[in-house]
Image (cartoon, rainbow, N blue to C red; front, top):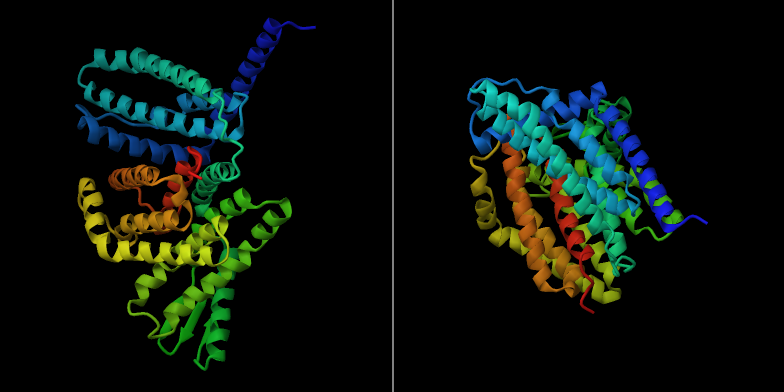
Length: 442
């Protein structure tokens, strides 16, 4: 029979081997030409701009290349975390924290190297000796600290509310990352364009049945008020990954999850038709362009609040909670939204180019949705936790706006669909994080 010492040694060797395999696999993935061009290089530019904003401009011109991306450190850190034998949701949470630590340190590294560029001796010492050692020690310290926390017992992990919330957080983050990474493909896809043409034809049929003269040519809907082009962007909404995360996290059985996934295509095509009808039919809304652009965002907010209320309550109680949440959120946006938006956007500086108003609408909308969700379903978790989540949401908004400015300075433009997707996902993730870290007050 093997002794405990032998078993521990065997586990240690297996962990080292798994860590090496994970690290090499991730490094190979990060070194792919597509990943370097579409992920590492834009990320490195953002870090360089952030470093200049934090520590000032470089003393001399310094070329920031892919070698400055921190990819090696990321692969090493993520390899150790993902190889550790704990639950996958714990590993993914640790991996997200590791990415934040490494990118933060690498940003400081770029800033200090830029400041030391005027002194070749200092630059060489920092670049070759000091910062590699600092990154290695930081990775080791983070990995050991995370492993210590990961091994702590969590008696609430089997709570029927907490476990789906944790899965929803992780799946939403993962699906959103995949959605953003795949955008060059679906925004130029002929198949998605064909769905856009189908949407235009369906809208034309509905308008014709209502007595409105309309017809569709390719992916353009023609009405007496003009033509309306339906593009791939009109079909593929950032709400789709959030919907899929909800289905996978809260589906009680594999059959329910399968039905939810299969229903995604007809559901979002139907929503695209409704959205198109809103802009095609004159006189439905006072400011049609704003409501058309924000259609999915507003509709999904109401649906999410309603589903949250039905999930926690039944019958009239669910309806009352949902209505109270939607009304409270709408009142906040209309009455306090402008004041709150001014306070949150003030640290970020001058407004960014925002033709659809998605960025300007985001802060007030997110707080309104967060408030609506809390009233509809999560009041039992305590209002002190509501305030903690609200503070976290405000922090993410301010830092997110600053990040948008840094990305803009680096020559990167964030697509409006991603802004609207984050408008929905942000409050959901904050609520789920707060719920995941405490039992409800029952």
